[in-house]
Image (cartoon, rainbow, N blue to C red; front, side, top):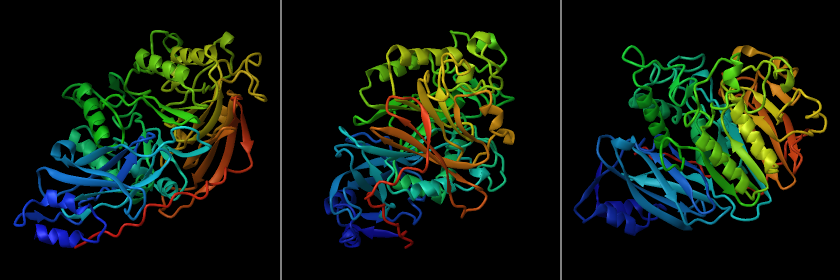
Length: 535
């Protein structure tokens, strides 16, 4: 469909779209024609992320009929009807960006809900809702926390439930947002049907995940704060390789090149604020109540994993999970923080996760998984020293990766009753909450009792259910409430509350609550339903 400038003005008048001046500038003289884009131009919807007190990243992708540059206009408003537009502009996108669009919308008010949308080729995107962080005093904040969402393993019912939570400040996603595998899965097949290696493969896989209506709605209603884990590149990846990657022409080619492709596409498709596609560790401040410190335990500085029985390597002080530069960066962020709570969003279990119970003086026992911090004990010990030597309290670690639900009090020697008391929490340096998989199940169906016995610092463990958790933070306490699903094989499965545990200000000790914290009321209005233009 082609229309003239006069027809553009007629079509847009009174429709709540961009100001006429923007369309006049875009359309040129009266005789110039504009090709109307396909009805599915905004097929991958909208998203936002990395909120600051005065800015937020806005994201969309266009799917034009043919190659070439596409101009995309955007606007952000204080109301869902766009009567109070507070910002806007135009950007260009093309094949080199996989037609993705990322805008850093600045000049916003803190602790405020905004609504945004995009326009291109006479089409308008769905309306998204986002929220900025507070700049000063904050009484209460709420976050949904999710991880491990494998498309082929089930439906994204957890994302649907998150989207329905009206009072969430942001969604913290701890990685394995996509999976690189080519398996068909028990519920729905991956696209492409093979393991993704080339840049086109990674882009197609993100496009498939972002076509899911439940994930789209979660992004549309809430800003996301993301980090990757291994499956955004390939299984058990580290700085210089991966267990699921073979160098050379007989395998998947160059790891350096594959990692760079994965990081580039992640940067294209995620509403993340990064200066370089390979560096995702960063800090986001939420006023005086909390700092969110997002880490990269996977690709930045991780040394090659070792066998969990290789005690010498596990305790080697020259090995690092984060890389020594990220370790130093983390220490600086913790020491300089003036926020009441320090939230660390990261990928793999920090707390000791043992199969046999021994204090450190007797060797520490046998660890279950050297892919986590248990395989890099010196890194963990240096982190513990920073907390202890600088009297840093109220540290809450958020973890994904293991497709199960856990709560720990982390401590240097959990099997030594002289240094750690399970009943009072004395000796604990902080707490850790592990989010279950959105769709993935725990490895081999191992019951939690295998781990709870040798690990007295474990305050909760569940290995059969999928779901997410809600983190509710006030000056007095931080609560984690787990919400589970009996099955993700059915699109209509409903969540149920599992358990809630809290740590009080200054205590680093977990106690079970009778119920999850009440929702915040009144909550900001949802982004309105979108009626697609099918003309």
